[in-house]
Image 1 (tube, helix red, strand yellow):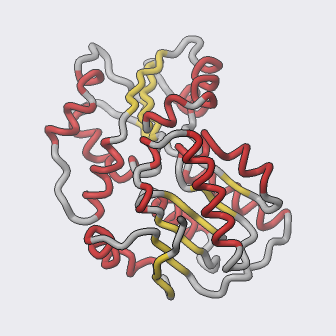
Image 2 (cartoon, one colour):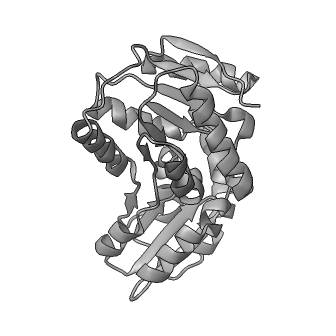
Length: 262
């Protein structure tokens, strides 16, 4: 199994996969050279994704790919599925579930600007808006804040308040927030603190849906494991990567090394 993202957000997907499928072996690609995907063009995202999958499959015997990034999924999934014969699973902002759960009919959607600008999201919002109000925040800053948090850097309340100012000023806040980026689940506590001091809130991400899809594919297609060790690949060495390697110990990667994606 290949799992990839430009940052650590995809590790939240991997964490859930490890819970549900503890015996599964995987390759995780941290494409930190291209971080964040959220400020890249659609052309770059498509070409980069093809490059990642081709590069890995030429070295390792992968038979299923998980795109642990909403931006890549909303922009490139259909193209990738047409180019490769093995299953490719993406992760998407779950607007339909939010529509069922919300009580005050005000839904919040947070995602990168590239995700928000994708035709997939625009169509999905249009189909599901009906009696609900969808408050949108398109930002690339939250991913960077998440990256710092996972490395032990304190989250700035001031920066978060600036990002969520349009929601803070609302007379009634969204009671259901869709996390449209895998990085954002790392900031649930901080987001709740600045928006909801007393009232309840429901966060929605699609990590569990993705894991169920993987399970179904493995069972239905009788996919066997060809990779015998957990492997972590990064596209660029940096000081921040060095800090991250300490955090990675709990994922039990047998191999950690650089991969050239240029």
